[in-house]
Length: 404
Image 1 (cartoon, rainbow, N blue to C red):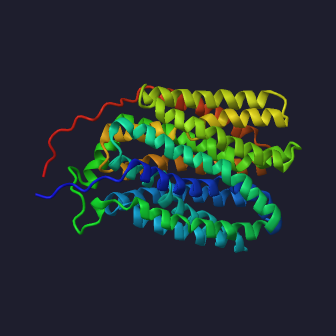
Image 2 (spheres, helix red, strand yellow; image 1 turned 180 degrees about the vertical axis):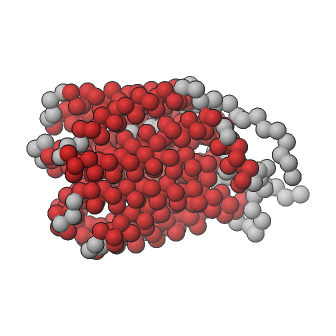
Image 3 (cartoon, rainbow, N blue to C red; image 1 turned 90 degrees about the vertical axis):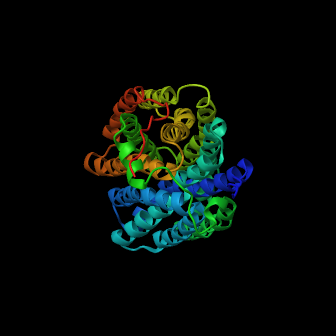
């Protein structure tokens, strides 16, 4: 009789996983800083840039499903290494793309695939398989907080690189930085995936998918996550240009994005901790409703650097704080055997929302000369997401005997 492989330590998982998320999410959070330099240098419209980033978010979501399947079957290590290589290639391609098609292929397709292999679905699968239930939501909160810290750390760094090296060389430097995820992935090699025989599971992929998609709470979580993607990616990509259009300096936008990242460190960590103590659906409903209120107040008060910083701080508390309770709820309902894959499907819904938010921002700006309509849509969707999360049932699903 062979003993089960010993799980990875929580410290090791969080040190390596959180640093990978810091790099991957930190780099992508600053893409809005490149909107005006690239469109002005290439003579493109904002919709051209926004469409490429929208493709990135859609590819990220779609690839995340398959990255999750591979990670559940073969472990996260291989997936993260492949994602890091694609990230570096995509950033260099983004720097030297001279047509909208090449720009969409590099910044959209390659980087979207890269993010699927280096962010939450894959890292959370490792956490779910190795961290006990009583600490799982907290550990997911720590990993999400790391992504927020990446935004706080990387966005000002990216602004500095653009100012000192130019936008092209700044992207090349980030491409080199993305390769640092490869040695970090070594720390997430799970012993249970080291042998020729994969871990045994009670369900096949098909059975797990049928169960999830027939379960109303899974559908509601996906609907809420669509709204999350719409709001955060619209704001993250278009707010720098929105503020510049209103006469504020580029530094205000950089500081605002950094504040979102800083306060999101606290927001995501708090959401993870609270998820161990109170109903996660109530946490999610509060976050979405609070976002709608924050955006409404931001649009009503006179615009100034101070109002921008207050808005960024409040939104930071609410930014990625949906991630720990959403993923912990999926794990709690369905178990961890297919967590990366199911998390990938929920995240795909998030990325459809991201696609709509970033693309509509560019499209409606070019059509109307204003972002106002998209702001109003973001408010309405926030109220809707708060309502759809309330009926979610978090208890583990009761399974009947599976047919063989």
